[in-house]
Image (cartoon, rainbow, N blue to C red):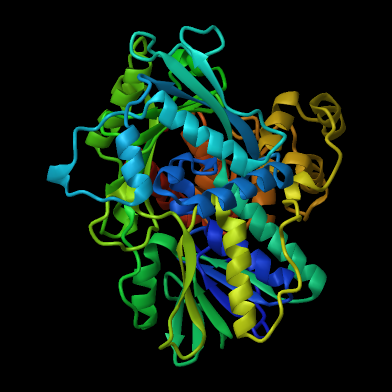
Length: 568
């Protein structure tokens, strides 16, 4: 893989170096350029290629955090949930969730002990009792009070059976509590939009914003070299005014590579999920989600996911290289058993699973605490022994990426002697602010494409759909809009892939499949489609013709190893 011949990079003035192009690194980059600070973002992989891509894809307040008395985190998360529903409605959608309930008072004592911070040794803990109606109602009552969101319906309790509810196991469950949170199907696209917005802010302000994927930062005294992973070229060398370690679950490894002395900061846990197109399960959910409790008390989400269903998650201590995290057969059996407990009429087989994924949560190191009890709060850890101001982001989740970035920027700007003059709290993401929301038929006619193509492109771009399709038509000479030529098995024009190479930092086939076109979750994904995308990379001078077979072989191996994804 070689960079495009036309690529050039300028040395930014007084830049801040951000290591990690996941959700937190992207949000922080946006916050800093909004305050006039030049930024260089570097990631060993693609943007949003780590924990961001392996989450449960929810924007939520954290209902179960209430049980541990973490009221401030719940309040912050609910405020951000409300904000994202307003500022990114094309990506963040309201989601009604049902909590099936077996008893009135079950689990009340355990919930009270958790709330009071009473910890017991494993041999002292009584057998687990699932949370009962009054425990859940108390949590939902607080949840609604903290949310203060008039756009979402308050919680409601249903006595089973009830025709309005998903057909859950009515021999086991006697009530169901309904409440609202929000779903972010594609956090990869969300992260991309944060970075696109940061680039536009920087252009408007006349400052530098640069993103290097598949690069690493090499420290030499007070200078940093940005080096391609193959080691053949140095793209940039500069002296950063500050270094922010936003590599999430990789934070300890990053500090070690930089030679920054630090105690162990992270004690992550592994969460695994699977996606299924099981027709009966899709129909039973009918666009709603289920927040169930597994036999051991851990939460399991059964969520609508377009034409599929997303099921997760596990919560296992994990101390290895996050790159090696994989969903195990035991985890998948655990999740399938949880689905069967809620929907006994559904028979899930291994062959029903379309794909799996697993990631490591960047939770703080806390010793012997159970995974559920580890705080989901976030903070900025300063490394006093570094030669330039150096910080690591600890914790965080999708929902609070913006508020984390705002507080982190405040600390960094203060250290640089600069006031925080701008905030992102009312700034929409690009896909919700560009153009009127034309109906699909009108857009299809104006762009000379099918309604299905408009729907597919709009799921990625929101109100930028017309702008993006027009850019395909009137872009660079080698970007020629051919609306009838689609990627095999999809409704996406091939020209859209070319547009992505030009404007969205695409360097490899996996970038297309996993984080731009979201084909990982598409059924079917065909080899012919991969060949067409490889051809786009060749035409764009990102991939050499001689490397096509190796690139396709690499993505096929990756899809099988990491996702158990079949390619037809």
